[in-house]
Image 1 (cartoon, rainbow, N blue to C red):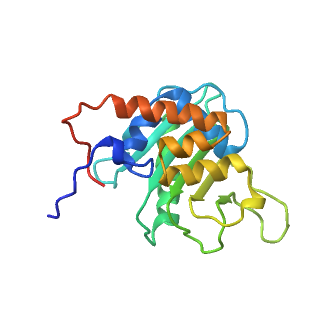
Image 2: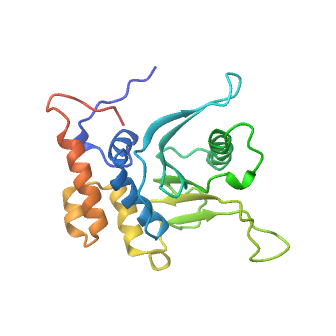
Amino acid sequence: MKKRNMVPLQELNLADRFLFDEVMEDPQTHREVLSIILGKEIPPLERAQTEKEVRISSLARSIRLDVFTMDEETTVYDTEMQQEKKKDLAKRSRYYQGLIDTGILKPGIPDYELLNNTYIILIMTFDLFGYGKYCYTFKPVCQEVPGCILEDGATRIFLNTRGENDDEVSPELVEFLHYIENTTDQAAQASKNERLHRIHDRVREVRQSEPANKKSRGK
């Protein structure tokens, strides 16, 4: 088994799942991140569950969600950090959606209208689709009727920290995605983005909580 290099928190970027999970456990910080990604104010959140295991039976494959939370309007958010490019990420997001839906709809309730709105968000340090976009948003649409969207409440978003279409997305999102891979005091200080400043305050808080002789999980 290959050993992972152990590095201090000070040397990790948010692209590292360990630091990402620690930072996003704070509801206000996670709310700031979601507001940047979705381009709107997000209602207050519950405290996030990190590394949340979702299993529907002992025979079915379980999943472990990076950061899972719900807002006060019962919208569900699963936010994943992904550094390794894998071919199955699209279908994995489909499986995540199915298990999340199964887990939040109580047994015996026949009204599917009670299913929560959900966002599955994958933040990736690569371009999964190859079109140079920072953000790829997917909702089911009708092939026969352009503009006819299947309003089932499910949205899947794939973010690319190395996008090239700066003029098509908000400067706030571009700065945040660059910050994911360059989580430094200098990057935060150079930004005029107040949300990013508050996110970095949380990053510094997490980093300062680590004793000088304690090492974080490896990259």
